[in-house]
Image 1 (cartoon, rainbow, N blue to C red):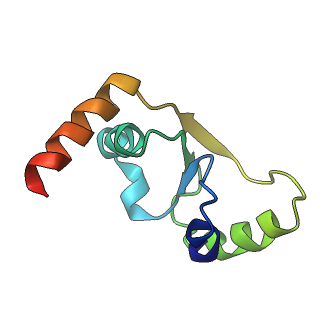
Image 2: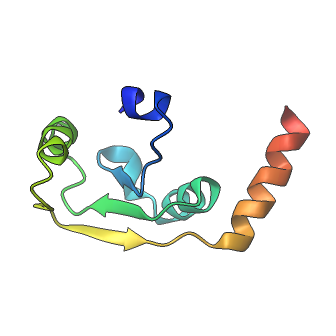
Image 3: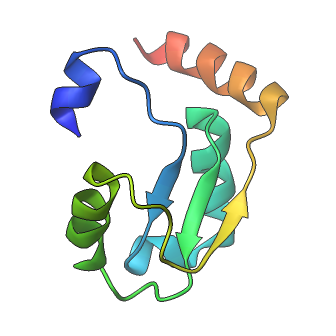
Length: 88
C-alpha cells in the first residue's frame, strides 16, 4: 500500500474492518474527509482479513467479500479541508 502511494497511485476506495468500523457516524466522517467511497466489512471483527484482501488485490482476481458502501459528501470534503488548514 505504501509503495503504491509513494508512486502516486491513489486508492479508489477505503476498506474498514475491526472495532473502529462499527461507528456509522465516524465512517461517514472518514468518507467525507478522504473523499473516497468507504467499504465497511460486514464481518467487522475480521481484522486479519485486511492482509488477505491486500494479497487478493495484487492478483486482480476481483472482489470476494461482503461490505456496505458509503459514498462521501463532496461538500463535507471542502469543510474538512478548510478545518485542516486551521490546524496546520
